[in-house]
Length: 192
Image (cartoon, rainbow, N blue to C red; front, side, top):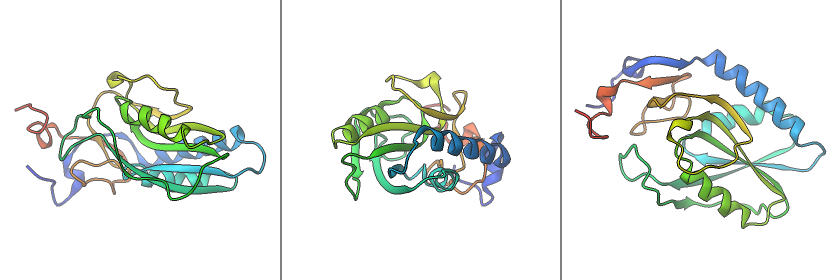
């Protein structure tokens, strides 16, 4: 079963509407601005592809000099919805972070395995600091504990899409975070 022509038809419930997300992103921007006093450059590292929408809105809410870099990492294979536990870097940073404050911008943290690996990897590049901001935190699925400095929303263990999050590369363009209808992904995770 594939995505409908109208992606909204595939959503069983809207978990976070556009206005709620916008208000929280604005607040996160203010909190992050306050946490980095001075004029030093802050490097936002967007974890592709899911965090693109979030980092775009967040960078405009941060009132200081920021630089954007992107990384693409994978711990999911093919159409899987479960992490394999093996992290691969598909695209590394394009610039140096030596001596700079780094803020990893993530769309969602569930098991924590990918982000745990990425945090250690970036720490090895001699930054001044490495901190984490995530739009969504799904603690019910956590395997690896890690310090998350800023969380937009803690959510229940539901399969969510929208605002950058996808299923099969669909639904990223939804302006809200919604719960995907179970019948669209059940066969992939072994449910009938």
